[in-house]
Length: 401
Ligand SMILES: [Zn+2]
Image (tube, rainbow, N blue to C red; front, side, top):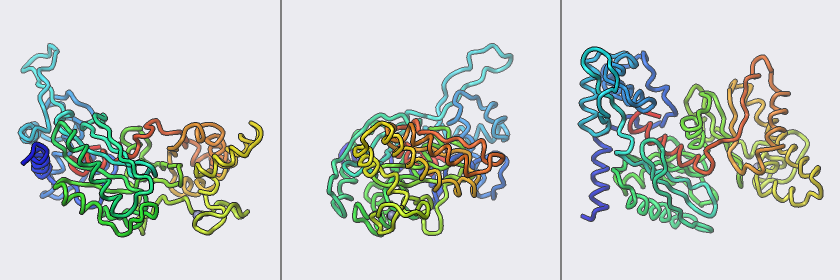
């Protein structure tokens, strides 16, 4: 057995010990572990364990007594859980609290942030697949890319595996799981139902990668991953929409802290919804005036290049922003969203386009109900999808986010 194989085997054993906390439907954020939620007895221990991990994940440096108060469990229960978590190397003791309170000095605890690795992949860019290795905090420790211009089908899947091989070899701590953001429609089992650009159809990627590496794997749509990343690492509202603009336009919708998947796993696929009744350019899908014809960056850049004055360029961006606002209005209104976040090239999206969207949204929704809506650019930059993939693994394996 090579060092890498040994590391993978150790990681796989570790991942199994961690418990497959949440099989099936991946969840966003911490709504699943809120204190006081009703749980069946057989799930109580797993639930309590996730409560402790979540409390430490969000705020390390707490004592057992602090944890007991925060999560509402007895000190005996907390001590038992913490003993197990220390045994699994998931929780570490930081030392004695440096204060002079009377009584026995408290030992402070933290989740073992640097003791494990997570691998996140973003397959949504045309020219390259991107991957990272992070610690449990989502701090990027390693990066790798695989050039995939024109690569499709089985060859594209091989490129995913080659990238994973490289990242696994570079991970210095046991890997608890792999998260993969794929373009296209992805079902709850991590099967890529359809990703036309990569010529993938009904590809059970989560199962294939899981069997190959013997590690827990989460595969989801890239915009859904981005929404989860923005929720955890960008501090977004529990009711929010993340709109990704690039060669296409897609979005991820989070309601009540949970990702919305939709009846055919295509929630958030707004790119081919026609905006308005006044025609528009022909789209790749055959319709006229789809949101992508107004907003996808190749079309926008072509219009900006053709424009002959700053005023004309400004008008191009503002109109694209207005079309986005028109298409988002009913969604924001129907779901009473608190935040809409745009991800994509800042130089195109950040100025007049964002203003146009904002003004249109405000003029088309009721100020009394939706006046608090925040519309902004993401601050996570190009890592938004891989960070979302990391959150998916954290939530799936440890119940934290
Ligand atoms: Zn279309």
